[in-house]
Length: 93
Image (cartoon, rainbow, N blue to C red; front, side, top):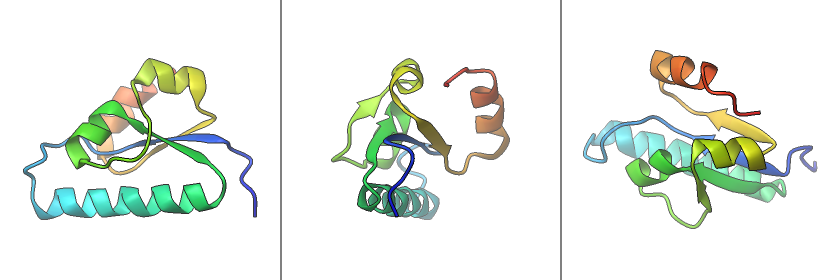
């Protein structure tokens, strides 16, 4: 099934890279989602702090403003209230 979205941003939890098992779990989840989206024909973009904190490479990295201008969809993975407040006050699309 071909996706209706072409450029999809992945935005993950903001945490230090030394957070251990939780960081590893977040990275694994984001990588699985990225691989799935890529297989669906999407261009996957990583939000800058997400890329820095997870160590995921191999995808373009953009800041919030660039994501809003370029991407068709932004997926926020994890983060709870911290992300909800940040992203609800930031107009992405």
